[in-house]
Image (cartoon, rainbow, N blue to C red; front, side, top):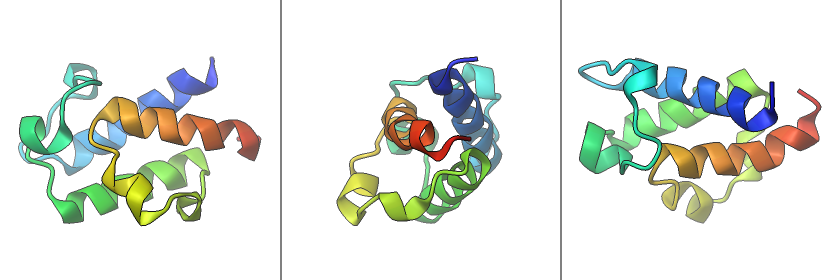
Length: 90
């Protein structure tokens, strides 16, 4: 399975878990603004990113505050993590 697909599956699963109400992973739109479309709060974004980084073994320290701020869509998150996932050997 390609790195992008593995990271996307992990990101979808983790985002689904922090949303209230929960949205099924396969129903999440990769290009939807996570705040506007799903009501993702700042706290839930941190929880989501922490968990998806842990699951993919990508160190959250790779990302600056600016990097995190511009991750507005699930695709943004997947793209950013995939760049580092490939270097972890995960």
